[in-house]
Image (tube, rainbow, N blue to C red):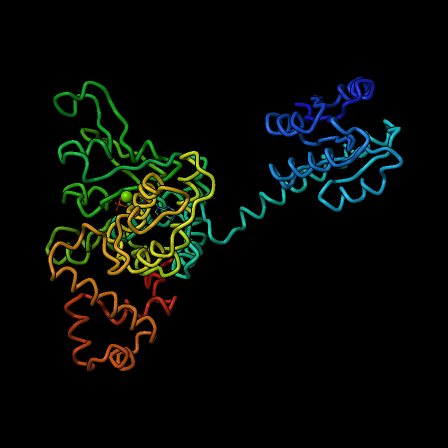
Length: 470
Ligand SMILES: Nc1ncnc2c1ncn2[C@@H]1O[C@H](COP(=O)(O)OP(=O)(O)OP(=O)(O)O)[C@@H](O)[C@H]1O
Ligand SMILES: [Mg+2]
């Protein structure tokens, strides 16, 4: 594909000359005045624009040309514009370069000189694009589509980078909507298996009697209705990754089979006699308390230890501090763009309310509220009300229905904040809250806040899995 060039000049003879000289190597477009220049730039996104400063209606002055330059730079501030000027306008041409033009040439234009300048200009553009791509890939707050500036998420990104390269199974823990599936996909994309398939299955969504054949496949005639032999998802994902969501829901019989697969990397299809070697990496996720399921005899401990070789805990959004504001702003720009709106901002009451709210639905809820806010906002400002949040109490306007719920919410917010501020030190936190140490302990127990958890924000090493084998 030839690079595009836009030539803005009202002189027909010059346009013809340029076309003749350049069209072999470039796709050439023309504009004769300021208005057409802006439109031509927007429609064609040329790699380079050649701009004559003397444009109608005042071809002997420079102001129309300079205005066209600023129009183009307003559309794209990285646009490459080369000024073509008369000898007497040299001073203006230099000013134009000061205002953001790439370079200038004086008339009469030497075609060889112009070709050279164009080649250099396009080379610079390519370098800039490459640099931008590199910068994006090194943006610390984006990791394989996952966003997060908080130390907690940065630690998760660093951990995924490390474990992705291994073949070890990974167990992802976290409340609903914290990004477990996103993390599973990131692990796959960062691994040497990235060219292989990424297959996801929700163990809770498939009836128990079908789950076994779904996972392990079946031979023809294995059961009524098994008319043909079928590969299971473990086999389909061979060379890649199988993501087992809601692993806590796995029925006991299948737990045994899965354990065997993890030990031997072999499986038997339902109704099959042969063992088949399969090279699939398992990533599992749950928002259930597996330890409790183990204590209740619902989940095999030996399977847990096999699956949890590497464990990554995705913290609830309310424990990620600065991420709430950061993610909200990123989503706001994303959804505003999708909604055909330019830049949107949050009103101060919206930011306050978001920081006070406890986000039970985590990132998914944040996405949904921001999506709603973009639609509900009357201008370019999204208020707490547009998000259906209450600024004063930090409650979802509709979520606290009883006084007890509201009280618990406020208590939780205050206790968590005090603990965070005092790095988990109970004595100082209690002093800040104006209560005694035993009362604070009681409150923490009632609200299910552990000292450990409160401290975690300040102590990164604690969110690294204790049993990680890298
Ligand atoms: N760090 C993040 N950056 C950007 N988007 C995120 C992030 N975490 C989660 N999301 C988005 O939030 C939504 C929920 O994420 P995901 O499905 O990965 O969560 P989950 O933990 O698997 O939830 P569930 O337990 O309900 O299945 C998705 O739309 C996902 O794109
Ligand atoms: Mg999920």
